[in-house]
Image 1 (cartoon, rainbow, N blue to C red):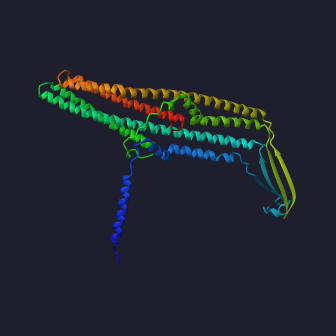
Image 2 (cartoon, one colour):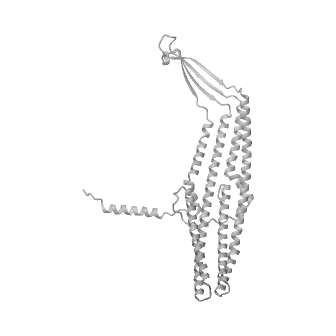
Image 3 (cartoon, rainbow, N blue to C red):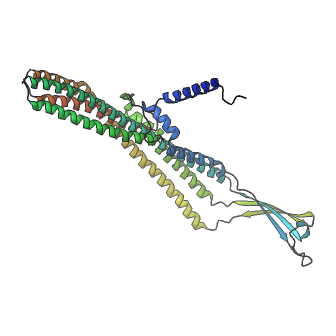
Length: 424
């Protein structure tokens, strides 16, 4: 018998293991676009998972809420000593009499339906909370992704400016060697480059912090790898941002308003139930009585609870009225706040769009023309190096305004979609 495995088997196992490792290694890290991140967050985020479980639990309470109470069975052994003729016994055929009682509580007509409806509306309210949790989570993911895009764009811009300052330093060195510029120009170019490198360190640190925050939302290890953000979300069209259309969608789809509406319906049914409790409930029962080995007596029973505690019931009715009024007021307050937030974010996204347009179509081209003119004038010894630096800073400021406006627009868009409870 061969004690060593077949070499062909070893080669096959090694090949399969290598293929599996390669497939695992080639799996792309998430983070390039926001949609892939939302898919992971929906599947893994523990807070959202807990709310889904709570919503499922609330849905399971509907059926028991409208069910009949369980019937009750009672066994009563009478005269277990047969008037002292025997020792005590628990055997039904040897006692004086055995009574078997079976009872069933019967709520008044409509009470079970009201309890079922109350539980159903409460389940809808919990479902609305779960939807609100997802809307909040999705907004956080979108905002963090926008921060990643903002930092990535700023890093890219800083590297471009660093390269530009390196070229300006070489120009200043050539002019200094020719006696056409002071050594201070070279030093100032080097100082600018040092500042750029310091900013790169800061941006890299902020990027690591934002990545850790995003991984926490995705229930991934804090240092887990994330792809560079490359796909920015486009600006929504003007027609998509009309307040009247969005107001209607918010009133119909906002998770908070959905939950508050469910509370109102539950409170209305609770009020109806409180008034129905004025009517008594019944208990029906049947009682066969056994003597020795035979059933010789049958008894039917009807039990009614007497609603004598009128003050208690009136207090419960007033409580239900107050709860309904509170639910209606709460919904009105939430609606006012949600619509105010919608208006605020619409104004913010419009301002961000206009700033981005101005930076792209006006400020940036003007800054580039100013820089090119300053560079030509510096080479012709018509302006000093400080003027050239100011022109370069103007280009950078225009680009930063452009990047910041896009970031603020993405944040506003995420907030609007959170209010809508769905994608715009």
